[in-house]
Image (spheres, rainbow, N blue to C red):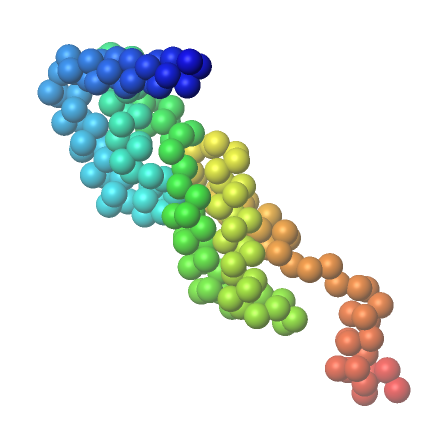
Length: 169
C-alpha cells in the first residue's frame, strides 16, 4: 500500500541520517556542541533560535563544507534556519512590557504586548534572516505599526480640543 511504502521510505531516510553521523570526526561533534552551548548562553541566540536545532545544523554544515570552512561562514548560513517563534515572541513581549508608554491608551498593556510580540515573532520567522539588533529594531517598529489601531482623525482633533479647551475659546 501507499501508506506502508511511505513509512518504509521514512525509515530508510532516518537510517541514512544515522549512518551519515556515524563517521563524523569527534572534532566536528565537539565543535557543534560548543556552538550549541554558546547559543544557549547568548540571549541574541536563545531569544530567537532553537539552540539544539542550530547545533545539529552547525554539525551538518561542518560536514558539508569541511574542516577548512570558517566557523563564521557556518554560523551565518545556519542562522537563517531554526528560528524559534515562541522564544522570539517572549523576547518581544518583554521588550514591550518594559516600555508601557508604547501602548495606546485605548488598549491594555497586556493586550497590546500580546499583539506586538506575536507580530514580531511571525515576521522574524517569515523573513528567514539572521538576527541582528538592526533587524530587531526594524521588526519592533513594524510591530508597533501593526498593533496600533487606526485613529479617526476627527475623533483625535475632538479629543485634543477637549483636553485643551482654554486654547480654543
